[in-house]
Image (cartoon, rainbow, N blue to C red; front, side):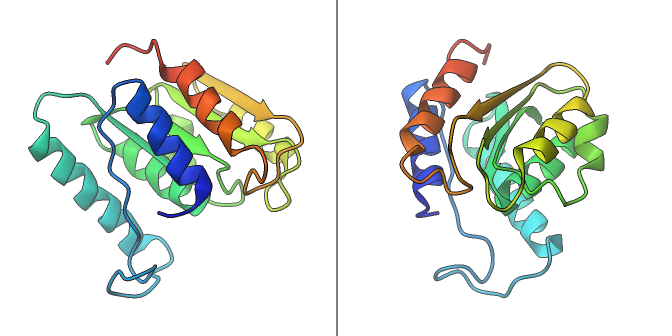
Length: 166
């Protein structure tokens, strides 16, 4: 939740008029529980969607995340009919993205050109396997944490989603 990329992404979404929810998955920071290899974390994300849907009835819901959180958000969001848009920043391309591959929802990916954990080539391959509508932004010379490039992540989000119909 305190990762610079997550913080800047939330700020960018707020600037374009989105309500945002940032939270730690189980076992992270001061959150109860322990890492559950994605199963429990997907439940955490679903609980967040439930909370947002209750707090903002009738408002389109978007799902987004960074790194492992991108995998959770993209997978859970692809399967949840209340979610209308999917955003993944530096998705872990070695995870199972079958639900995302099958989704016809708008999909937006942002990846660092020099990501040291998940190569940009693998991100491009994942992107190629996705159904339209979709868009991929590659940030020049950015590593996995976008060190020195986090403002460019926010700019990319605003550029991609600023005029998107909500």
